[in-house]
Amino acid sequence: MSEEFGPTFITVTDDEGNEIVLEFVDALEYNGQMYQAFFPAETEGENEDDPDNGLVILKVIHEDGEDLLSTLDSDEELDTVYELFMEALFSDEAGE
Image (cartoon, rainbow, N blue to C red):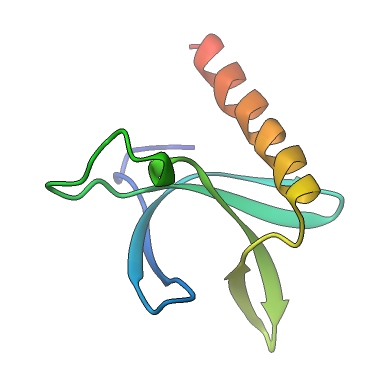
């Protein structure tokens, strides 16, 4: 993925109504489902060691002609897709 134009950011709202800014990392397809990975955007004063600042994985759902992002349905689905993203991200780094 070209970084020529800089990173891509999106804003999502969690279940409690808090807005979270995420930076797009990568996308992949698994079992016919598209997934996207993001890192929370760093904001001033946040603790970098916060365990909630890890990779965020959302799936793309097509509804009424629009692409929507949704959380994954199960821990098993999350674990599998997380491993696929880790393999993809680290294989890209190894090839540089």
